[in-house]
Length: 226
Image (cartoon, rainbow, N blue to C red; front, top):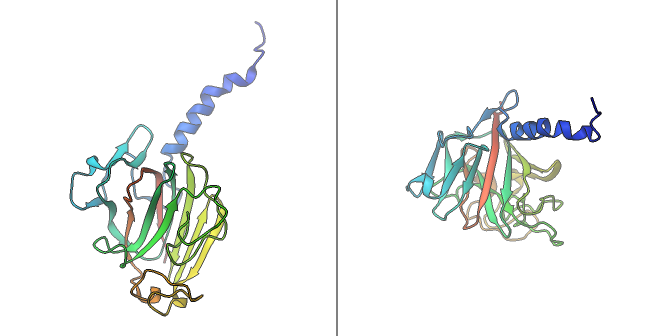
């Protein structure tokens, strides 16, 4: 039998299968799946319309995507202290967000948003760039990947601390107790919040924002902290 002159090609199907399995991987030990990769079980939609008109599940690759404008999507459950570990992909020029500890009826003033934004390659970094605690803490580095590439984000909320790690880099480390004045950040810059961040609830829903741009999520795992 002739030797295969390109032995690496024999492993290509196996590698492709492994890549496919990665998208469907179950949650790590100690975590639960907030999104099961197949249905919208455990989520509700505001404003109340048929979810499939805006948020679409693709069970073939285990993704949840926003495809039409209509509203945000929210977990049925509420969470206070937790680690949220997930992946997202942005369309070019996308502006979106992940709400945590939020009130679905008043997400802008009743909770927190971790900004998702196609800020790849931008030199100036602000509290409205990807990974920021929106309007409060800018990311320390611009760690987002180019549009249409998958990013991994880990959000840790414990008491007054909110930490964000994007693609392996810790980019936000915020102590909410330092925000003592409405509409002001500790450094004296202004923010949108009518309530001082230290006084906002420390439990609430998790949500994915519809801000008029397409965005996709997968492997959405959560571990509650004691």
